[in-house]
Figure (cartoon, rainbow, N blue to C red):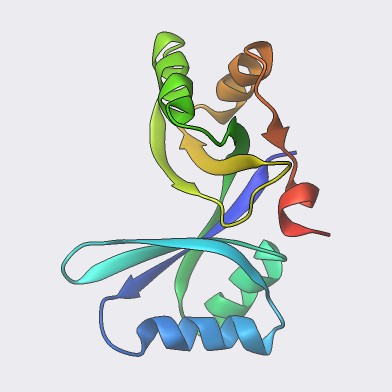
Length: 143
């Protein structure tokens, strides 16, 4: 099962992120990890939460622009050069990464990276064939 990521489009001004996080807190939504990609005036907050559907619904009710997207959580050995090896394998198999970021917790002494591929189903086939462990949604969000 793929992991659903919540993305929120926010104006880059004081208090806007706080307002979005307040909506999530009021709905008892737990943020497991997040990253912010920004340009001068706007940013995209990407996060893994315990209930992405409820989070999206609550944010939209408060007029936030948001969406959910499927991503893959991938275990990678936590040692120098292992991420590079993974990226080289992706390139050799023509897997295009749209973006990636690190998950905040380790699993079994391995780092977990979140990847958005342009073709997630093809990426899953290749990654499993290459021996990578794709972390299931339930393992990431702790349901």
